[in-house]
Length: 142
Image (cartoon, rainbow, N blue to C red; front, side, top):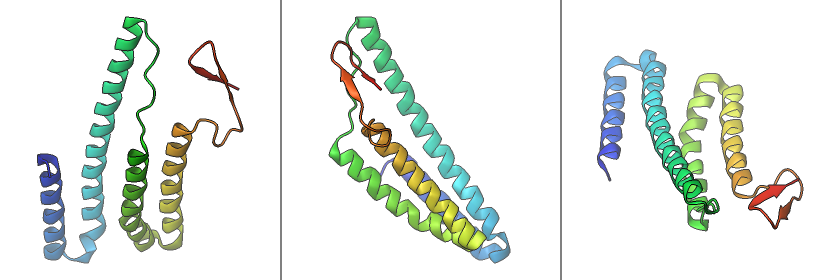
């Protein structure tokens, strides 16, 4: 567990303690506050990853080589699926608890959308029919 995980765990414990002290009427605000912190952490991680990948691509272009192949392995895709399912539990509880069936449907639509986007990113021809690969260049054609 790194320092950021420990910090997030502290935040969760503080949120739970505040919920016990303040009561159910502040539950929604406390959950929203905690989720905002989680969103900020995810945004920061995504931003760092995007910056790193852009820097790698710029270095490849500067060297005149082809763009690097995606580094998605089976383990990364499996891990993404597991994390998605684990996060589906609290998202379903929050969506269903606050907005009942519409909230639950919105939560699951988001979960399915994120997974569909991830699958389409790894398999470019998955939803758009078959594509043929241009042998002269490292790109896909329709």
